[in-house]
Length: 143
Image (cartoon, rainbow, N blue to C red; front, side):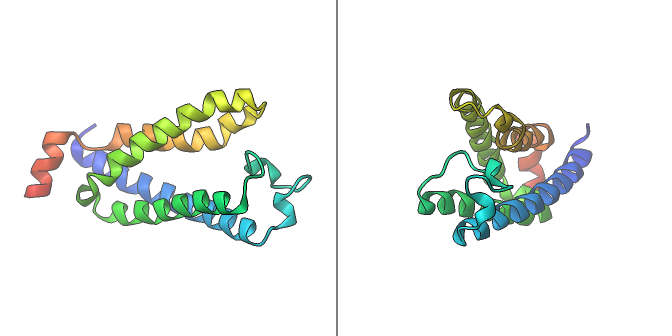
């Protein structure tokens, strides 16, 4: 894959993942803020929660991922200007996704492998594949 095609793919990937993140975490933030019954025990979207945490903890996690989604959309415009943000996003989500695998087994929520874990690992792997190589990215950024 050439660097130009990687950059084009990266822009598309960031736009798609950014939009999904804003929609997903914006909705979760709103539902958590409102104590929506759909998110409580027996509710249709209860599976989106790991456990009922203190409301302020859930809101903090959701807002961080919401802001992350906004920055993915910003990075999609000029990815080479975000060369610290994108590797951080890759490694943070790789670590988070890998950490959640044993946790899913420990709490008996194996379906989380296909939701939360998949979200983090698809993001990390996509960035791993699509990020420009260091020397070429630096040269293009300085040009």
